[in-house]
Image (cartoon, rainbow, N blue to C red; front, side, top):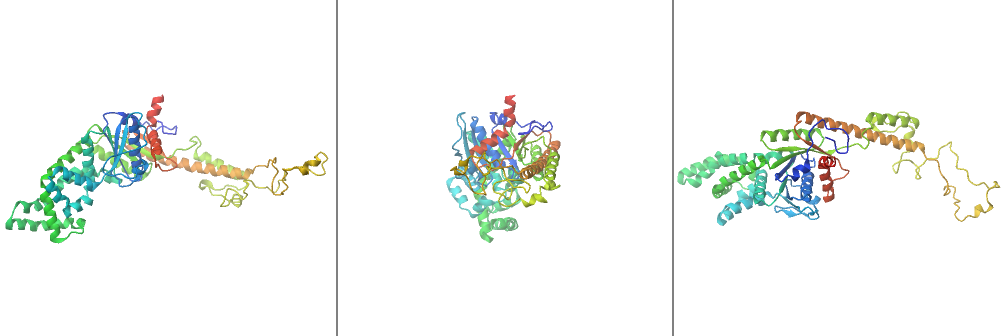
Length: 476
């Protein structure tokens, strides 16, 4: 593979063909997962935009509560309903929609869809349900599974791109069906359901046994305490009893959907030690769960402007320029200046002369017309454009450039280049460690941009860099 913007091969690792993945009609779901702060949301948005502008009807679902997806797509806000993204190129016939998971609203929709109106009102008004739907541990991941299942079941979209929460919780939704099943089948739920099914003294005994279980969730529920808590939980369990089986069935169906050939997982990382360690965890976890992994997106890779100029040669040239400038060995790898290099540096510019050059002690001013020179025309002093100020050079003067300032600038640029080359080498070593352990994972590298992506133009640029291998292959 050829790295984007660089001529160095990526050690024989298979390149990730992004356009081929997005254009494949069999690809129905793309899940972007990875650690926080690696550009996962931007990657998901760029993939969705590129697929839409290549002719597919796409919806991007973000589970990350950050608002960057809406901002980058020119939307004022995102909610639980897919919103059309304006400004995309529809020449190929594609469309782009975006939405952000509203955990509570998704839970409410499930209750309204699978319970009769009277039971639904009882559940939605229950204080225990309101606490559970607003932030109970694991609810977000399960609701993400539900929403993904809803979108897939509607068969309205050619492609669903899922942007997951940061860090390892990005894969917690894979555990949602199992955790939900354990919760629904657990002793605690069976104890709470007992009083509803048994009356009298036996029911009260069973109810008493449930107090120990209630202590496990009392801290989470917060504001509701004591017998009121117990009554609310019991009412909730009784109302939800007929729906529990449906929760687990749908979650299991979505889990199987994630394992199906039409799903592709993309692990997003940065060329940093912690991010690549998380990426390795994701790869291994997906393999263990038999989830289809498409490849690794390595974001924010630094690319040198002059890759053939090594850091060592750049530093040697910088030292030579510093030595010729009379400052001796200055700066080294840090780029600091010493001796005569310091006296001309000021806060407002490169040198202490606003004209950008320094008058040397052994330099003489450029010769001009002399009054005693008979070859000088007499009318010279009467020229209307004559500049008589002693501090201002004549318009046709050609002052000698300050070679010292130019040498200092060149030496500084060489040191900056050396630092960049060393950073490139560090990133390449970390990437190679990952590919050595997981050589089967296709990789695409996206060069770092000088600024954050905040609009469709930036997303298109990211998309083109994601698909650079496909474009280069097409040209060849």
